[in-house]
Image (cartoon, rainbow, N blue to C red; front, side, top):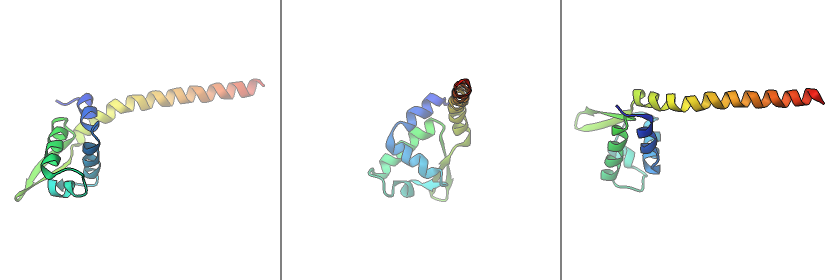
Length: 107
């Protein structure tokens, strides 16, 4: 099973991030994903393989084409990892605001 580290590593590459972001719009074939990218279709396929190994993307056959789409389970693993930082950031923000309010009340 892929981990959040795998996901972060896969998304570290700017081209893979662009592919990932395009897939957020819905399922697409390699030819559609390659359109407008500064890499070839075989390179897009290589990037998709990395995203698939990181469990961020799944594919399925539709006729003679393969459609790629985001993998909700893989994204859930990544989101859970990032959510822990968001929760801590909110706790820290609340503490900072309360501290400032206490300083303001003391003057």
